[in-house]
Amino acid sequence: MQENARERDGGTNVAREVGVLTVDDQAVFRSVARAVIGATPGFHFAGQASSGEEALAAVERLAPDLVLIDVRMPGMGGVEATRRIAAAHPDTVVVLISIEGPESIQSDAASCGAAELVRKQDFGPALLRRLWATHGPGS
Image 1 (cartoon, rainbow, N blue to C red):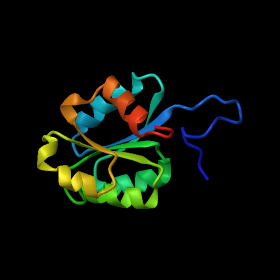
Image 2 (cartoon, rainbow, N blue to C red; image 1 turned 45 degrees about the vertical axis):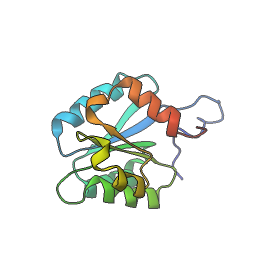
Image 3 (cartoon, helix red, strand yellow; image 1 turned 90 degrees about the vertical axis):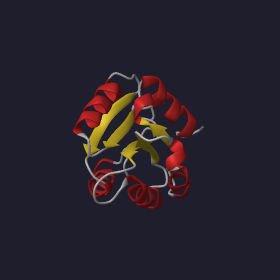
């Protein structure tokens, strides 16, 4: 079993950083997300994927604590990938991200197991911290 941020490091009672996987077909957003994650204390960039299919493999390989996944991507979109991640890894927090407003895709987001749907335009350190405080373990 792989250890994640919900567990303690070697019995020292020091929580590890939250590992974040970003999934987006836009390289620009993946780059921005990586910079934001790296600049946010308590979080580290665990990896990235550019499609839903790659996301499934990355979650298996990297065991991230938090997955930020774009709703609309070629091939398997974020909603279906989230459905599969949530079923196979119920302790992994998956957050859908979109440039579109939540009103246009809220019903899909609610039914796939995503913790929340957020707009890409709102992504930053404060949102990252809020997402984990709201949906991480013990919330």
